[in-house]
Length: 65
Image (cartoon, rainbow, N blue to C red; front, side, top):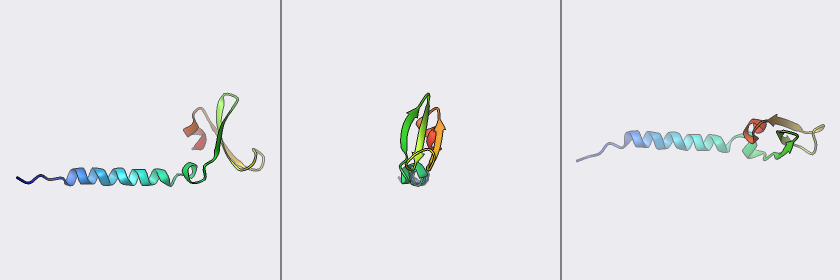
């Protein structure tokens, strides 16, 4: 009896592409500093808010996005 694993193979390939895509996100590549600023999270690329690039959000993921 032969078992068809093509569906499982396709799922594994899709999961692999998803993981590879996550590793290419700017927040993974550039590693911003993440800290609380008041009641929001701040992801900061650079030395300070004036010279760098910053994102703010209610969660770390939202700030990095």
